[in-house]
Amino acid sequence: MKQTEEDRAVLDSWPVVSKSDIEALNDLFPHYIFFRARKCAAEFHASCCGHRQTISHLRRTEFPWENSLLNACRHDQPHTCPWCGHKVVMKDLSRAGKRKKLKAYELVLLLHARDGALYADALCLRKEYETEEALTERPQYWLNSGYRFALGDVMEIDYQTFSGEGVVTHERGRLGRKKLVQEPFKSGSLSWYSHGPYAIVNRDALAACPDLRYCQYFSGWQYRPGGARGYAFRFCDFVSYLTAYCMYPRPIEMLVKAGLYEPVAGLVHDRKKFAGAIRWEEPDIRTSMDLDKRELSQLISLHPPMEALVCRAKAKRLFGLAWDVADALDFYQCFGSQADGMEVLRFCREYKLDPERLLRYMESQMVVDADLPWLDMADVFELYRDYLDAAYYLGRCLEHGKVLWPDDLRQAHDLMTGQWAVSQTELAEQRGRAPESANIRRLKYEFELDGLRIVFPMTAASIRREGKLLKHCVGGYADRHMKGVLTILFLRRAAAPGTPYVTIEMRGNQIEQIHGYQNDLHGESPGKTHREFINAWLGWLKKGSRRDKDGRPILPGKRKGAAA
Picture 1 (tube, rainbow, N blue to C red):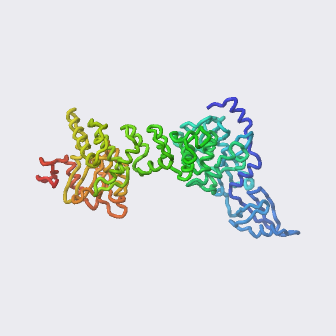
Picture 2: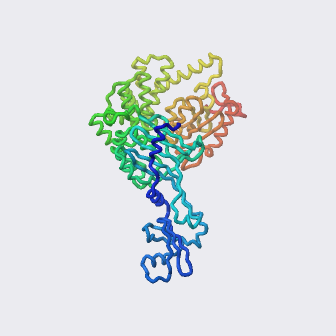
Picture 3: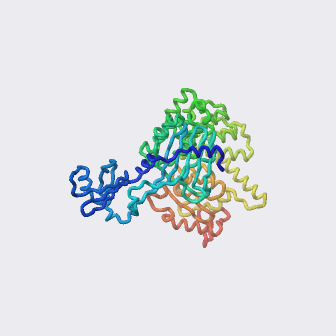
């Protein structure tokens, strides 16, 4: 953005880097006292305070600090500077060479307060000691970018561009999806870059700004889970945090004080506002999140994930359900990590179901088969969704109670999905094209030999159940399997076809992955254990998955089929 007259006026009144600021910047670097021994004296150069002095070995008057300094004249000896009191390291100039390894760089955000606004200069510092004059010089610096923080208006001038005068950007009034004001110190290409961590100097300027002194960045934000808890020397989100605070000061202050860091972190880092659960423009947290006094107490004590509060707001808006925070958290947690509460609510809206009745029904279906207990509600939900989708595509009357809420969900699911697979195959054949239904893929891959069996899963729920019982990640492949992007297969023992054993990922006739329990962490790969069976099956696949008239696989080189 080009500079306006208002921007130029702000830049003309920008605080300058003072001598005290330079001294504070110098303290970011390691301090040294360089010495050189002469015939009857020793020369000293202090990088911390810039003091130079020659001390003779033969003195009319001796001081204790002089004797201490002369006795410390050993290379790499720790000491205390007698002129300023800083901790230093003694460096012998006769042994330090050209001192190129002592060259150091720092990235710094220097703060100033003026006229109720906070100014921040992003400075790149360099300090080197190759010449004798440089031994006591202050660090060199150049400006990377500058920021001005005021309520409702954050200004950035970026000098890390091809423009000589700098590019000015503003965030005003509210935060959009795209970050206009960004962190300083970009590194990388124009299309892919990152931001370097930086030190913050003159933090007292933050307390000198009346509108920003309660931003909680150092006193609260650093104590979030995973935060530095007050021990950080470098930071990477100060600019983003203050930008968000300038737009929504009161909500951010109250959320951080209450320990509710998730919505603030989403806003600061990803510009995720959780708009369904919180209205950032409202200064009062109870009004912005539609909470009464009791629900606010629940919020502070339970610290629910924001997705649970989004589900609460969605349930109220779509179904008129007056859930409190505890009810919303129970609804969100009952599906575990395999199903999203919002996904369940969208499903209820699609089929006009009451969410509370759906929960009661799924609880009654938690154990459908004594040999196949479901681990959590997500398994039952996937089974019910597959059943209802199949019933919808087959044209069943979903207003009928026996269709909408079958007594035996597993039996009704198997029957309905089987009919749907047959109808899809018949429809594809009528259209005169090669069918690619799940039933055709099942006939292509299913195989049995020597007590082992390849099983093709017909539902996403069965794949997710496989992943849970074998403790690996195949559940994330369920949707792609159902869409035909890839194929998931189960290797089972013929004597126990319902017990998960080994999982296979296929692309065409090629095995991409084959894993057992916990991805074979404590045992041999099933590809090696069952190499003969796998090779026989792959050879049968490459020959076209031929079967006899009874549907049994015909192995290559044999006239009779294997056991079906």
